[in-house]
Length: 146
Image (tube, rainbow, N blue to C red; front, side):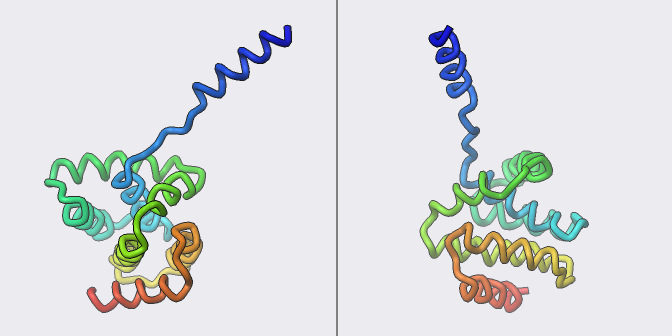
């Protein structure tokens, strides 16, 4: 009986392995979550994410659209941000700073300064191993580029 329980537990452990997402997919899902955090997923936010996916990951229009479609599905069903931030956190600090700036571009794309978007990026910052100061610098950079 004990052996049967051990086999059952070990077979569940093997099948319960979490899905690993690519860096591109994790980044895209976080961008979608930033866009959704104010309750409105505006076309301008969608378009901004597409632009950043194409330029940041050197994707053509179709590849970026497919990636964004998959990211939208993941972002809408995700229960937390950890599955995405743990992947992006592995990038070098310079790239994580650039990514935080991209998140701000998404959050500010609709021209509104929303407290929910600000709150989300404040929570994501330490999960991406970035300080409050670095988050603020990324926001200033995004505002200066808009």
